Amino acid sequence: MTDPAGSRLAARIKIPPRYQGFADIVLRTIHAQSVARLSLAAAGVAFWIVIAIFPATIAVITVFGLFVDPKDISDAVTRITEQSPNSVGAALANQAAQAAQADTSALSIGLIVSLAVTLWSVSDAAYGMARALREAYSLPPQSYVRARLRAFIAGAVGVVALGLLYLACAALMVWLPSLGTWWRVLAIAIAIPVGLVIQAGILLVLVRFAISGRTPWRSVVPGATLASLAIALLIVGLAIYASFAPSYQAVYGALTGIILTMLAGYFGTYTFLLCATFNAQWVPLPESSEATGRTW
Image 1 (cartoon, rainbow, N blue to C red):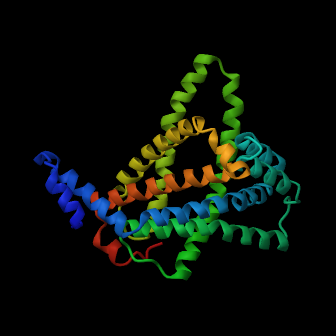
Image 2: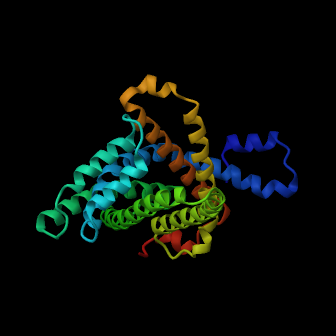
Image 3: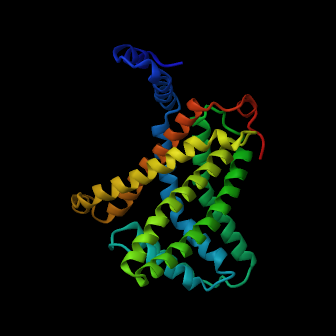
């Protein structure tokens, strides 16, 4: 059911019958995102994502430091995030270098406690994202204990995935310059669609995990695919905008990196939640998922 404003808009715009079904989905999406207050939810998730970046990187170094030299992880973070002195990347690289100096070569009670506390901090972002996704699908919130436990699991998995991403991106950045021009172009041409598929897969798993019901995977594929493409276009747009907005540095100074990261996190999260809402209107969840949402 559309809202009154959406009904008035639809009455003013003459939509061909062949597009009426799609237009109804769009109107329902606009209404649903307003009811779920996705803009506010995206702002909260973006805040926790920025807050979680630093503990997540420390957790990566702590976990991977049990198997590889922590300095290798720190160097990978530095290679990927090396930016201007006022950027979040520079602060992140400095934090990674300090964390790499700690002894993480063997498990200890202190290390386990420190890792648990760090993962709990990371889980705040997962908790906020899962809650926002359930709102996008008009599902009731889970109990606090269940939601926090699931967020902790998601945070732990996310830390491992982030570590693998750091290593893979760092290796790719070393490997690409060694190629010839045409081979480099070919590698990039292959990497882009592969990256989109991987991103869509991650978003798909995230949505399915947040819904936590007996939902067929194919029911959430459209939203994850659309979100992957939309976020990729958003990243390109933000990169172009940032290149033409040097005044940010003059206005915000040392906070420039944080401001830009927050904006990127907000728009990326809002785009993801909006695509999830569109998916929920396009392919409604089975009644069993809407009623319970208890399956792990």
